[in-house]
Image (cartoon, rainbow, N blue to C red; front, side, top):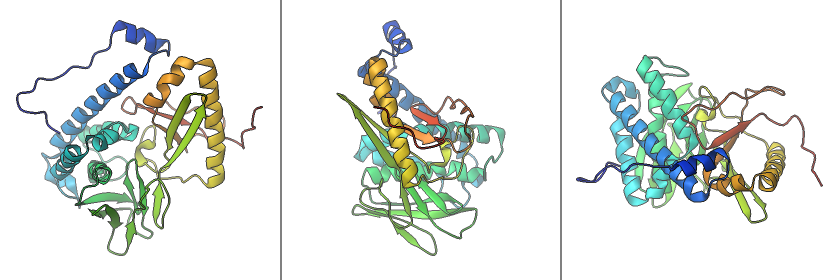
Length: 308
């Protein structure tokens, strides 16, 4: 994770032409990738500052390992498979978590749950990166009402546990599990699928002509909330099919009327989530400034009607 010795810092730059194109929703993929690289660098700095500040007070760790171990596991993952860490840094909910937890730490408050649980989410991020990098490792991550999130992968679910607890994540020879004192949940080979005790984060795909769109439909990450952490709310299969039709229709509209946006959307938009707190006719609140590359919407009031 740290820069090589003697290296000079690189700066992210956008030309005025890029800004004009972005304002017209008419940029290109290269411009969008440069924006994402800048956001990734900003989040890495934010996470490093957060963990450095939190490490000054060891009592913030609660039942979890020291926060330094999360940074070390991220460094191992980046050395083995840099894209695994990039995937975690560009996950929109990593930004939500970092911004929310930084505010808690600076104000000396707990928020939704004890501060150690939010700071300990760094271990969950590191564990998810390590799984993507296919590392052998062991770490401890927080669980909320028995739900232990591995960001961008899914959630292990343990019934009848304390409100705030911890679980152990282990990996060896490409096999991964999450355990507490009473049970062990084995991750499936394809984490986006379901398994006993495991809710994978599902992907929605759509294609309009030459445009291919792919979004994670995340209904489990606690930091997908627009203001504060929220519990998981699993979409049943019927609702998932309704959202697939809605997203198909939205992609057709974008490809037809905003072809420039259709070119950059697959690069710039990574995740979609249903906002469980907005009811019919209620406008969703604006996402926080740390949560780029996602979109939210209220649930459909009924099955959308197919258009000819």
